[in-house]
Length: 124
Image 1 (tube, one colour):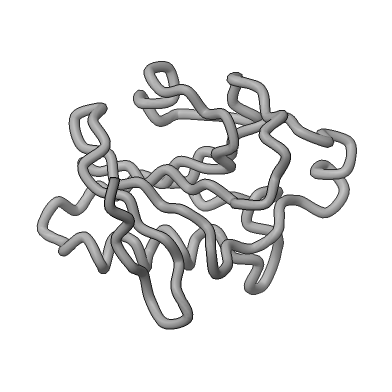
Image 2 (cartoon, rainbow, N blue to C red; image 1 turned 90 degrees about the horizontal axis):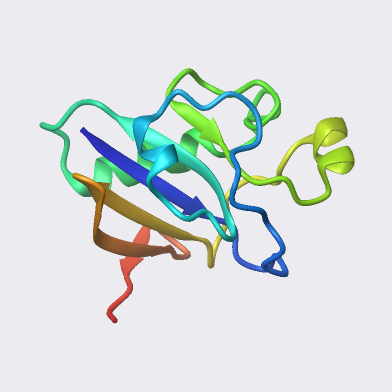
């Protein structure tokens, strides 16, 4: 199983370290969240990383409804910044510049930034 940690860039880094809302993903307890807004569980290990990233992107976009107020069962919504505001309209959609980290066995194995088309790998 892979988990994609979604970080919405542009926040001021004041997120807490506790999950916001219901979190069933085991990795929630083991990771520091800082500016992360979601963990997306990708249970199909046969998918290539680029497909897993696309799934995480789609699940963290407000398409027909708020992804954070009505999350998919594979999405753990994180953070508590501006909780009153978030409870009204939810988080924004993922967009260019946001960072997605692929986590396997509680280790970050790849970091990607949303680009104009798809993702680009971020080197350390």
